[in-house]
Length: 142
Image (cartoon, rainbow, N blue to C red; front, side, top):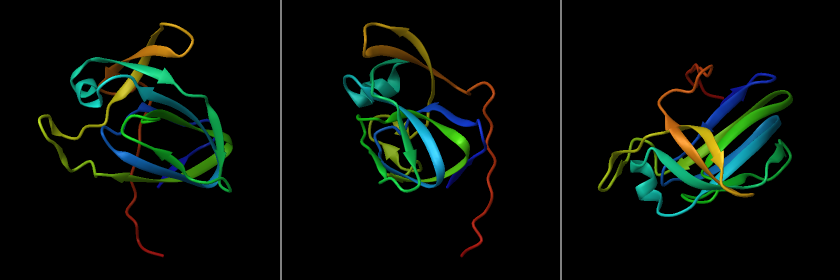
């Protein structure tokens, strides 16, 4: 579960070769999604990736879950809208699994480079996103 304070965001990041279900459980979020163009495995090895920007959308706690695939909507940014928000991510396979021919499954952060047209653009991978930090708390049960 991720909890976002008013005005905060989870920066542009990916879930490499993973399927995902994102369900908002409190408040509402804005999702900026990008879909990979080309082979998703080669995108892991390149410093830049070519993507198509999907339309931004606002998702509230009473909306259905958002589904991501290894190529569709897999790179995204999630921002709190009009106050705090909370959402649950279910991802498969898990980050701890290996990608055959590549190695450990990483999570990359991205910065937008340039627009090549109305919908296609490039993103550059970065190690850490400036200004972003996260903290964890153990789950103690119901």
